[in-house]
Length: 168
Image 1 (tube, helix red, strand yellow):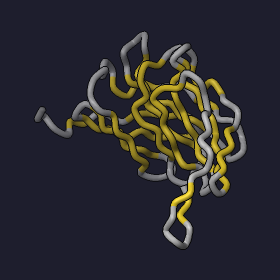
Image 2 (cartoon, helix red, strand yellow; image 1 turned 135 degrees about the vertical axis):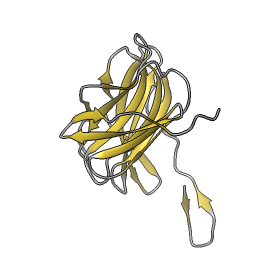
Image 3 (tube, helix red, strand yellow; image 1 turned 60 degrees about the vertical axis):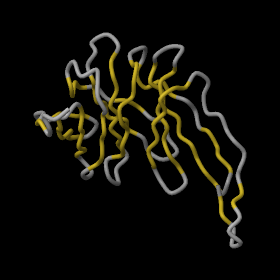
């Protein structure tokens, strides 16, 4: 959407980025590019696709499979502040664990996934919220608990879970 000096909104053309996409998450890369991750409902793959915006025109990049046949839900997706790394949380089908994975992406390139880590074992319910702290840390809140996820290169590690609230 763009707003002209008269206050009138104009809309660009709608663009579909992928068939079978569910639970999309978006993170800003630059002022004209963002990265979308989603679950392919036909395969349960987590996929990523860069999107570029110029005025009201949207251009869809190449879709990349990041993690194969594993996810039923995406929790949160956030960029480590001013870096080319992103943290994605997701629910794994086979274990029922919430996991986090580093997604590396440089503007104009192809996203790639690091090795997933468990961040909330058996945590199949509740809301997952994530936000960046700085270029190497994000905070995750899930099921009345919080923890910090730290990145070293493309490797993630999770701090100890801390109870935030005992109230339902």
